[in-house]
Image (cartoon, rainbow over all chains, first blue to last red; front, side):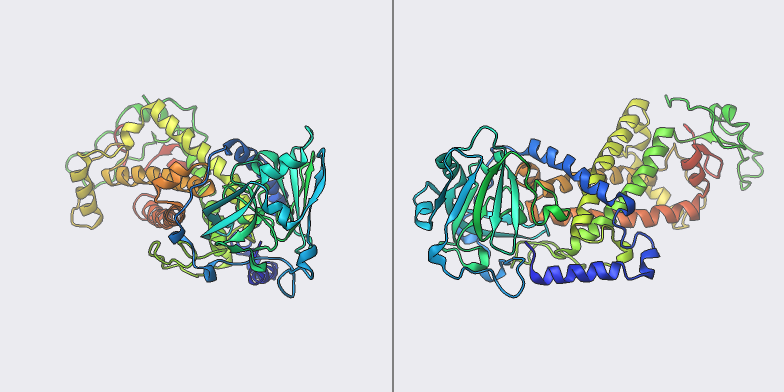
Length: 239
Length: 259
């Protein structure tokens, strides 16, 4: 999840890196040359290491007074020309399916009666910034329990209505105690800036793994890609 | 204790094997200013030379990809909190020639690949030092302090004679010891910001994620400063040491005891 501004700067950087003479100077714009793809593939080794390092350990919780002032908490989405918003929020449902015994849809009210979790935790963005906020949502493990994943399910694909944005998670990360489908931010209903009506959240993942504007959750046996992951960002994205 | 190396590849070293065991013959006492005779002494084991140059290449690329990563958020501290660390590079857009990776993901992939050779190389070097016994030439001890002062006086031209030394002079010991410690700090602070939740104990050691990221950045500037001084001293004081780091054999002004 990048700010529009950042995405704009990125294309500018790419454009200027390929612009010519500067390419010849030193490491300038060096992207790994012919090794660029190999470097990206090597990233799967680090995904493997990350998965080994991942544990049921809980991320630290903070007191409410540690919250980052909301105006300083960035809001990222990829859609051009404005924030992704539902035309008719009342008709929104979450589709849960794939390799499960009982695929079904959840309305907002049905999600709110699932076992919930509220925590005040630190958000780590791949860009290097951090921010603290309180999130409330349905435990992912409770949602999974109600649809009964089949033994073959090893991954989960989360789909967003933000212009095709999506993420793939390994099942252990998704089933972690602190993984929630959040519908409240700092004690108020989630706004469109943070992914309304529903966003995936966990303090054990980088921000770009935390799918906003959710509309579908699919259990699968094949590792799903993702919007940024497919462009070269680490797939596991754990912190 | 230094393990013997096979004969060096350098073509002009016929006298080397004997010279390595015998200290250079002193010249006539009446001519102290005369340079020592050009003899070759064995100085660096191949493992030391290999790890030195691997380290040099990897570090430069780590710094270049690190600067690219920094650009994605060129400041420190939680959002809305500017209290972490003095940073003269806040908001600085480092020039393209100093960066590697092209964009954040490319730089991350370089950085996360190179961290493995960097760590393995460092461990190989330390293992060699411990195994060969060369560690004793490198560790800066309290008794090296007055020697370091003398060496500094020599560099400042307040002392005429180069003080006697072992394999490294006391200032070199201080510098090389600190740089090994700095390498460890760079790797550990890097791991601390890679996995601040799974390795939270390590991150806490650096004062939390935001400070760990700050210290990781500070190591870049200490490394860069070291590099400038290190290279300057090689060329200004003892250019022969460059050949020694390439071939292993030293023939220069400071053929120190203990090779």
